[in-house]
Length: 335
Image (cartoon, rainbow, N blue to C red; front, side):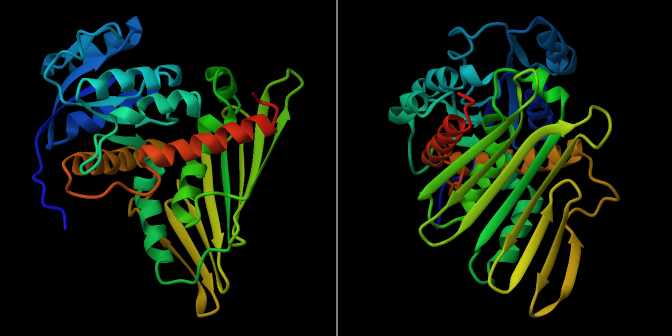
């Protein structure tokens, strides 16, 4: 049993874009830490950060130099651009800081390996921001699966509106959105090394990938299929539509993340559907807020040694998922 003592950490945030702003809200509302600093090189984003958090004493830094690293802030969330993930994490970890790093871990496995010598164990000083693993929905699914026969296959679907192609031109469908389902599959499958990885992509007339598919298979016979795309016309549907369907020998379970519901069909009983979140509606912002809060609290417990890191959120786990992304990118001609 863990016997470490929880600490009150000073928290810094690197990156105040879309996901960074959601992290900031979670940190500011937490009673378990002190929100101390924001690092943001974009003038508009930094002005917004100053407007929202400057009055409460949060320090602002305008570049990725050494000044903010030399502060007494012991724990950092890195939510900057993917191309800065490894360099920022390396600076912080080498200075003795704790780091929660947004997905994906970096641009490549080779780059991510630069962090290897700075990762500690028992307790660790590093965790990946693999948010779905900490959502109430996935936690409920995991509990539902505990007393059932082994998973035989899992099907993942993740769709976004077309404007995402323009907003994130430097990210592939695998690294931007399918990554969530890849680390989820890592968590669900006891064998972490597939014997076969296949990937395909569909391209628009303009040469941009708007749909990607992937298939992974394991020696045990387990299968996982993935589809992710920027296929919804802008403004025509809810912003996101994410689901997971898993089946075993005598059961099938459907998880709809943003409806916050699980449907169970089995030979033992009639089909049943239940809500995980009790609100009348659960918008994407509400879902993100709940999941980020759970993730942040888990991160604090992990670095204090209060609990073990969740499967799929460790440094070594992230290397495996990054390797899957690289293989899929190559096989789909997206590299």
